[in-house]
Image (tube, rainbow, N blue to C red; front, side, top):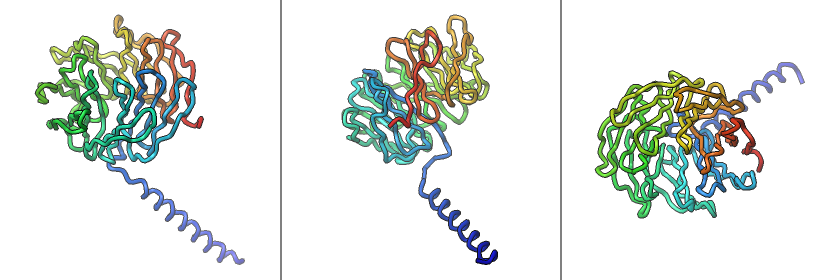
Length: 331
């Protein structure tokens, strides 16, 4: 074979590979795939963990009792958020490209219901009694209220600016706190009237939020300034900011409300913030791009932290170190 023919064959193969690569890329259609996030939920009995990353069209279901992968659930496009109901019988998964929230039976792992939330369905949170699900829609800039008994939408609240993952209900169930990606603000919604009652500003690339049990204080991660904001809810004012790691997404309040943990995406760490001292008192390393997905055990002794590869690190909070890790490739 002459060198000329070899060159032509090589170029043809290169062109074919390029065309196949382009075709493969086209097969992954997403509605809003440029927005990336992950999610972790743990069942009330602490036997099951479910993890997702919006770049992956599947969910990893872990058996926490045996530290193994129980199943991989396929058929998603951009899964956004996961929440268990208080009974642990079901969990709900939002998918912004599918435009729905799926209801999954936690025993059989079968999909048993669909809530039509529209393309852009993103962050979700449950009311304290588990009867109502609130769904952020970042594309439509709305929040939809679903009655989980009937599976029907009760109200669609407008007036937001790209609400994404972080949304919380106050412990008394009376106020919904919705973060807005545009404008760096939190919108307050009265859950009795489904009307906006005010806003809190002064953030810098706001990410995750958490609220104290008395509903008086809110904490928010500022990934733009590498801080956590401490907010007085009554006055709707940022009282102070506490420096943490680089590019913080998490602002997870421990069950005893003495400590806050910030997942720092850029430096692969968890900042430990003492709320009595109002400062970072320790840094835990060994993670891979941790974000807002931080879940505590009921006894407050451990935290489960989701990594970028969907592995889950179990952290001993007293010793401030990773004590075990669940791998997404262990199935």
